Image (cartoon, rainbow, N blue to C red; front, side, top):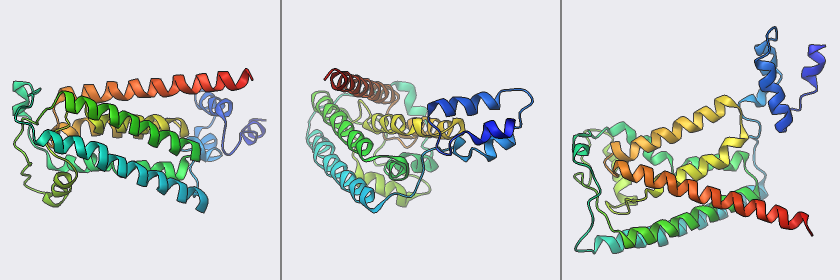
Length: 256
């Protein structure tokens, strides 16, 4: 009978089936191995090879995001580099934070991880993610210009190893555009789009990745601690804005 119940669970479970899997895993007497073996989507319920149509759409939106980054983020960084006066938002104890070179890989991974949406996203999701990210970028750029800052660490960083990867950081960024950290805001928005697409291990992976990105921006001496908080709350604000807008859209559509 247990076997029949397991066979009724869809290979790509909806939320009810997802709850059923989690319930089965915590029920005494049931084999977790059998449950997971017959529900391979426990770890990632939505991954699939993308169609050629979606692949073209995905890279079109990513190209738009890159252009936006270069135009909006790059311009504010350049303009702030011309400022005679910028604010120092660091705390004195932060000067004791060591440069940890291998954290550069978590820092740069932010530019790669949107690729997960190629394998588990939908056209509407990549559209929403890119335009929400651009809105958050524009808002962040306004704050950068109104409240210009410069990193208090020695810049550019002088690592003892992985210099090639730090050269990429220096090519992509400058010691300005600190608060709020758009690196953190962007990463937060990305995981909010990714988290619903997998099970507990999948979610844990992306949450841990996000926490490591938060640490990395300080440990590669590109940001300060307060920038993490600013970027996180900026991400929360825009995610809540997005969710509210979606609810209003659904409500207005259902009332027609």
